[in-house]
Image (tube, rainbow, N blue to C red; front, side):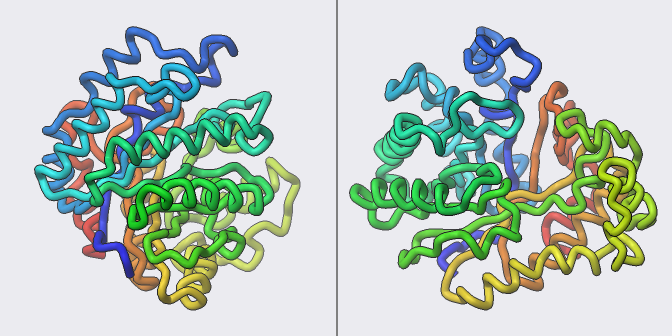
Length: 360
């Protein structure tokens, strides 16, 4: 396995998810304001890197948006790039690996509709590749930095993403043969799309997926997904299966959902991990890493711990390293998945700390 790290923490809410674009007028969504820059300059400091290190983590997955690093197409923002470079320096100083994750790019946003998608536009794809080449230029001398090309590609024809990923990898390989590059699946990094992900003859390409099943629990009463918002019900884990069945009956008139399940627990989650086991079996020489999994902040803490424990148990059974989502979320983040207190930035419970360290 060409990946030396075992357990990491994602950072959102700083250079991505710093505000939600779906409530902004269309012509204001992709602009940076004075308030945005004040947030970027103060929200995460070296103290936070030390804090994550002291929690037992060995790497950090840093999410950023394309518009944060670009001032205009093919022109880059030295100020915000400097923040990323400083962050990488802190991680190096304290012995942490870094995954730089393009969380949202022009044409592939999770929370807003766009008139032109990344996969409709050669120009957007050229900008996408150029941004990664700029990152490679700036981190050329730092082989400890890993590049995750794109977070949660939408539910598109996998061939479209495979083609763009291959073009991007080839462009980076022309200047760096050994950069560790991470690619995820389509359908928002769903593990059931692992079979459709192109596997490369390249030992430095790493493959990734996310786990958020059952979403009616992990995203319960969230404001970004109409289903959970409409159902508006507190969900537990392990949970009464009738609540989960009712979710589908109320929303989709589906009376067969979860008909084979007696209780929502680790046995159901094992089904979610079947594609992960299959990928590991078919590609034993490839590195598979789970880059995201977590639960919304307002879910019951004991249920959050129970779910996290089960997911990490299954990841360990599959011998898959992981990065939990996430460290800290802004109060206006529609999907607050943070694992630390907003003010003290201490982990929410001693039990959660044991769990994310793999002491399951």
